[in-house]
Length: 303
Image (cartoon, rainbow, N blue to C red; front, side, top):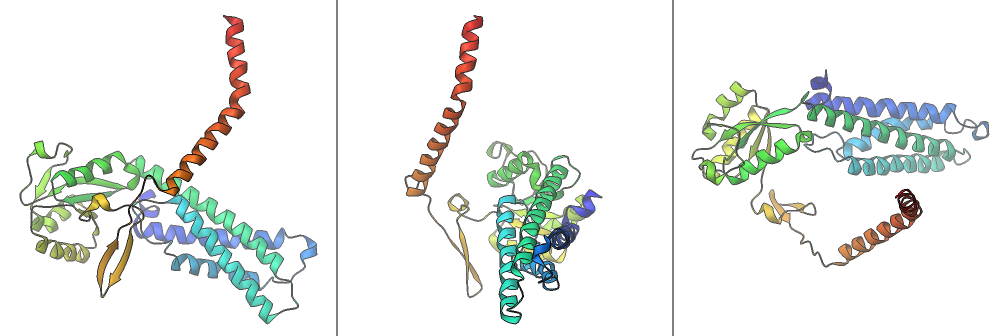
């Protein structure tokens, strides 16, 4: 059941169904738990909240497949999406039925929807993470390139089972010796041209393109072959040492262009962060100081 609901297309359907269910529950809670003073204004209009919210969720790519589920980013998207839908409905009501006071009911629906969907997404993320870590689900993964970078990918995947990628082995035309890639534990399964055979034999569902000894001209046919066989593909970019979470991806005439942003450890952002860290640490120490003094006095009294 976990494999059916928590990965692949089933994961997309599960998230959509859960979002739709809790949005409907939010509208019901807003309607039937409302004070009598709110009246019935906005009762029909508020039912537009669930489908519009689902549409905004889809436009914000909340149902795409991701290797790493970023819960915090998802919660921010939920708040932004439900706020946008509530604002649109209130604005629509103001222009079409200016005498109706629909804002209170829509505001209640917004609050319930934000809380319900956020809580449901947190539980879903926890359930998927638990299933991945316990080995109930996971995508068998082939790594193309058995060098130092490929071995580092394998090690990171083994250290982070919550990513849901289980390394099976490597494909490389001329793999370097083990001494040059000490983190390499998975076996060499063949040449990159053996992708179809190896994928069928191992049941692989994901392919990671690392740095391989084969020429780059052979990588694009491999990607097309993966797409034809419906294998998911990830790649380690060149100059990966300079790529951080602040990188921007632009397209110029169909050519992807990464805009790198340098991180300055002496910049104002880090200065503010260090200042806030010190303030938080000082506040915590101040709050705990009575307890620490009491413990110290008790130890001294009993010694």
